[in-house]
Image (cartoon, rainbow, N blue to C red; front, side, top):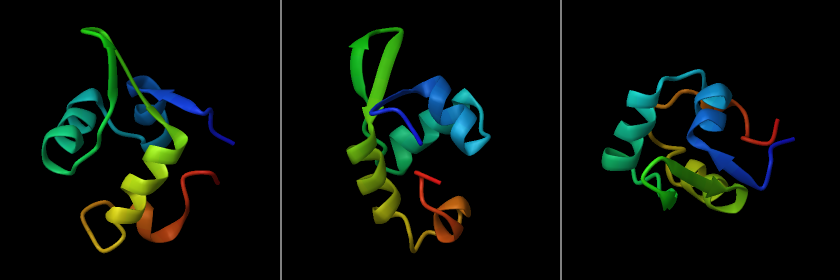
Length: 71
């Protein structure tokens, strides 16, 4: 089970991607993270699930088609 608040590092671990990919998702795929400071950003589980749901038809993000974020 995932934490209610997830950091960039948590997302990197969850999806097996690097920081550059997370930043690309923020800029180009609508991933909205809350900025606590210039070095600290997070997303809530609820917002992450909404974001995943919005990308289900996007074949470039394979994980979303096969399992939910909470698995």
